[in-house]
Length: 150
Ligand code: FE
Image (cartoon, rainbow, N blue to C red; front, side):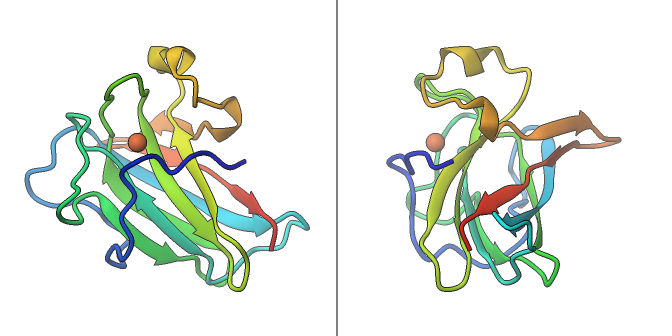
């Protein structure tokens, strides 16, 4: 399901699977999953463009900190290394993403973390957009599967 991109999207993010860099604060998050079509076929070479706030709830609007795009592999899989986004304004923690299969239109949406009290007070929050998370040894492991018209 689609959601607003909000005011902080920036085109031309770098291609990378890890948004980690020195100085980023907060717990690390390892997000994995796949992109499949509504006919349940993996979508290879789907574009995923992620962007998010830092631990203090701030976006980098001058550079590309915590912004990056990547393409799914032949099995439709993706993976993202990042940090837990902070809250800001009336927003609960979320990761923005644009998903686009080759030759189709862009799906713009947001992913949410389970167990956040602020989810219930955020009018953009949708249960369908919750990641599945668990505490790994040294980071939060999150999963989300995208189903798109492709
Ligand atoms: Fe946001």
